[in-house]
Image (cartoon, rainbow, N blue to C red; front, side, top):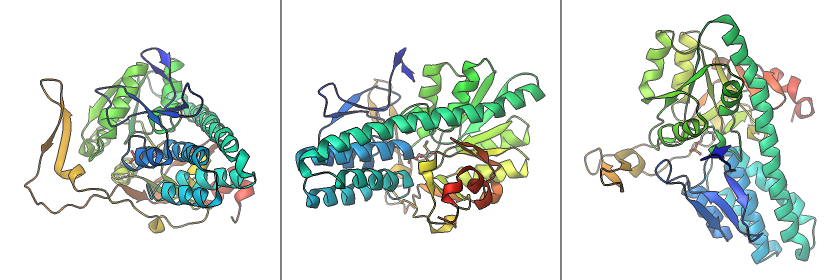
Length: 363
Ligand code: MRU
């Protein structure tokens, strides 16, 4: 996608041919900063501290983390250390394990002298594959907008949660890919953007992306979606996923489940954009997915740009307030209208997924 008119990916090989450029997403929307990752530790920190975030981008960054590790020391012991430390950096998004298993299989086949080159090559392919997958999700999802646009006159109103745009992937995004394509094809689209407490990825990232691309949007507080649905102001919801089970249960940013409940109650279609690396074929029940719990400070503080232009954190709760900060929740398959994958749209069920991914049947 474009930043100030320039085509940009969220992660790319640096101009020196070995370091890795990322966008420091903790600085958006107030500053657009490219950061250089030069070591395994840099990659682990970038994922853990959410300089990069979003399931597909976490996977891509981990792949480059293995490449950086192999450049420094291609031994078996270092490969194991790199795998373990990257895998532990965030627990919920399955793309992390998917990318690590994939690239480590490739690297292990090589002699130590060839491991770094093999890892860089596979990391680049993983990035390109992610772009192609999201492009295809966009192509399948845009049909939903065309169908609603043909049924009603005027703008198609879509609600999304968190950030499942190009910043959460290598390019295009998952949930936002159909929205970008609908907009680019002249279908009038308007996006309701959930702010997405506690880290506000909707308010800071989704708004910024949509603004850069010229897609009309309105930022809303997390609690407003149900009201809008009751008033008939939401035609469909599309969200992303950090892990979808083989039976179609969807784990995504905390608050997704409440939107799905409200959508169900108001007969608003609720779609999930699911790239296949976000499917965990090894589990069926979403209740078994590990849910990340993050620092209390994310809940007790909020930070933003002050009147003097500086970014300042402010406390919003009494000092010492006990806090629970769950990063994700699980939306049961029965509340999901369909899964938009790179191979088409399937019902959220084992049978639905098996029609699109027959090679995974019984995996
Ligand atoms: O905690 P985050 O910002 O990594 O959470 C991101 C989300 O929940 C996204 O919806 C999900 O990763 C899908 S991204 C295409």
